[in-house]
Length: 353
Image 1 (tube, rainbow, N blue to C red):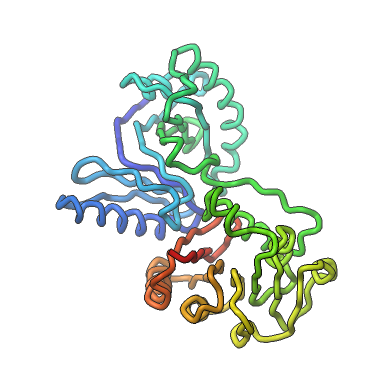
Image 2: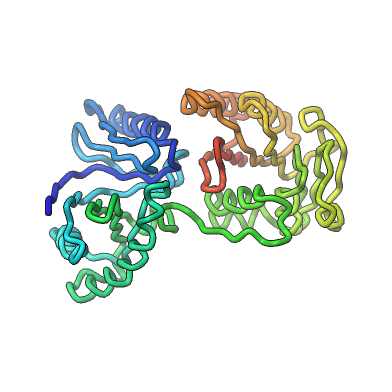
């Protein structure tokens, strides 16, 4: 067995977007170091398709960014060390020895595998190890339900593991940063899961209670077949669905839904609404410009929309679109995330400051 005391950060991300995740964390850490007057920020280690990024410190310790502040990282963990050539008969012993070396205690443990093609075979192993890890931690005195930390045992293979930790109050509340949602039978399309996940990830509990109240108004641009309209109407919002295409009949039959056959780029409401939402397949800069106009002109107080990314220079396009939005609507706060249920896209939320 080989152990290394490498520190730094481990970030979970969507497989195939390791480069964008790496660019973002370097951008984030570089900003921290400019403020602190430090030198080179960090180096990154990635493997395409792995679903993870390692960020290695180059000049002092790395601060762990808040998980909600990043776009391409689903979760961010502080690395305690890496283990290779583990004995399959005792994977947990070396891992827990590493986790407890500085007297740390943990409220819980998650055994995780990457959300990648290579990680599929590891998920069964992860589930099997988690209960054993909890029992072993209790026996070693590493478990304290009042502790602020969570232990993460991150499998790279059956014989390799990264041991990491995260503050429970500042990290994603789902293993791997992925909320596992169930697609209801009556959902018109899988896009219904996107907006449900967006509400979980981009809004906190108080914001959901404030911004998703029955009786509020929304416009859904490019609504057909109605996945986002259906989710809004289920929460009691009055929705105007804009699309030249048809809505699913059961969505159209909902009491709070009105369907207008119109072009999503041309429609403007007669009076301001609480929400504009948009999942149209269009160039991201064009959607960003449209949403910026809706917010700047006061057509909507808040917005939730997807930006479909190009195949190349996706981080640069992300920065370009967010810059355009902030310039167009400076009185709004913008939050963005590549959701688990997104594909080649990111989801952006805009709320008034």
